Structures are given as C-alpha cells and as structure tokens.
Amino acid sequence: MHQIENSGMSLMHFQQVKKIQLYPDVKSIVQSLRGAGVHNLQTNRAPGLTGKSQWQTFIHGYEAYRTANKVLPVTYEVYDVIAQKI
Image: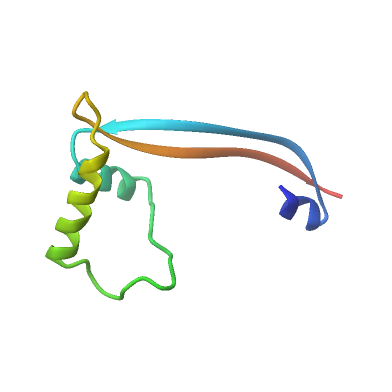
C-alpha cells in the first residue's frame, strides 16, 4: 500500500481475500494454474523444461500438504485495489 501512496496515487479501496481451492492431485493443480495463465517469472529459475526427477520431487513435496479429506489445497490471496491519481 505504501508503494501506491508513494507513487502519487491515493488509495481509495483495499480488500484482501484468501481463497482456498482443493484438488485431487498435483497434475490437476498445475492444469488449473496453466488455465489461469500463471507463469514462473523468477529470474533465478533454471532454464529449460523441468526434468522427470525434479517433477517427482515437486509432487512428493506437495503430497505433504494433503488433507485428512485426501485433497491438496491451493491458497490464493486476491487483492482488490482502487487507487486514484492525485
């Protein structure tokens, strides 16, 4: 919020909502993220495609988050911001 105010704009409205979606497996999560247009924009990421070993490590790591209902959660923080130029 300070960035908005420091950029010569006035914050008119701010709302933060946390949403949790549940998926049966990691593949469904990745498909949903791709469908939403999500991309990895980290500058320090490895170039090229993710290898089979890395993919299996990712899946194994995400399985630790499986709930008692046998689903995998994905949490989104959605920000609704309205700012006006001063």
